[in-house]
Image 1 (tube, rainbow, N blue to C red):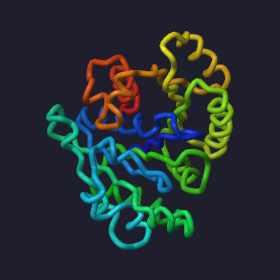
Image 2 (cartoon, rainbow, N blue to C red; image 1 turned 90 degrees about the vertical axis):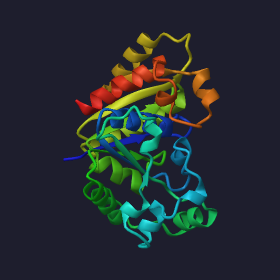
Image 3 (tube, one colour; image 1 turned 120 degrees about the vertical axis):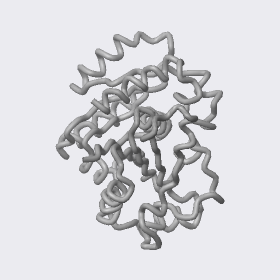
Image 4 (cartoon, helix red, strand yellow; image 1 turned 45 degrees about the vertical axis):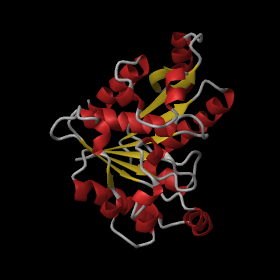
Length: 253
């Protein structure tokens, strides 16, 4: 049975999509079939990390939600990103959301059938024989986010060491518990290197009573990459990559 992992944040700008892409790639490299669905319909972006251009995409998640295609038709095989380090069974598929202004406007104006989105998750797992499905959620709390949290086996909440993130994360943690999410973890991103990471780790775990999976520092190398690739594939020996690999191993355990 596939494991469903949602990557969420209360606010934008936390690096949520970067975390999603890197964890998915790490899990795929271990010999798994991995799916990613970009449910951030109002502001999609994870496709950029995989080098997918708009003209390359025939169908998107929007097309599936509007009944124009099967969910598997919208899945782009991005296994080439693994750079020949994968095993024979390593595969990774991405279902992008549309970046067309008219499509985004339609979603914002009309919404979509949440039940159909749930069916899409299950259909993609079945049709592509997915082992791990990663859901890149829309920041904040809305119907599609609540659905993603509800069906997930594991939820990562990504936050920065910032007071607004701390407050929003408290709300998200409370909602996740009310939804009986089986496993909940926090991942702190963009911490300045001169911070006391151990103190932050202890403070956050004490505040939320939730396990901190990792604290990732602000990185000039990450900024320099500028979303033009998957960080842990470009810099496999970087301390950030090693931390993400450890998180990926925990996902698979």
